[in-house]
Length: 205
Image 1 (cartoon, rainbow, N blue to C red):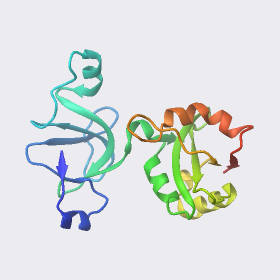
Image 2: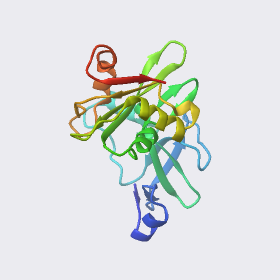
Image 3: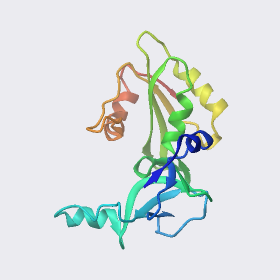
């Protein structure tokens, strides 16, 4: 649905690209209302390049389409030049104390830490906050990362509401799904084990 030349990418490296002619894009809130330029919401698209639906799967079509618009599940925003920037997947947004926390933003921040191989930010249910932000980190082989030092890094580099409730440093790589992405469903399910009685280094914020 979007493309960018080399010069455009250099000028706007965080953007996925400019919307291609003939494709319509909306950025909407949870109620399906259009949001202004620069404000993040779910990206809906329609146009001749888009599939018409899932074959013989009315339930999937009902979940994915609204009046001909395809709900991508991506959270992003548009600018005045029709460039689109993706900030997260909707299913990975953590809502804590009424604030939206984009897991991809948290992960990018921790990727600056030397010795870190991979990082995953995810939410776990909390009766008071709605969700608590947890960050799990795997160091490179032979590297040691201290959870307390990582929490200090978070406090120095993130807004107060984006500081994790807990940081886990674990010795094992993350399990991945069929697309090769970190399986956050598995991470959420395994969180109680990782947090208590495991070989992970854990610190609370």
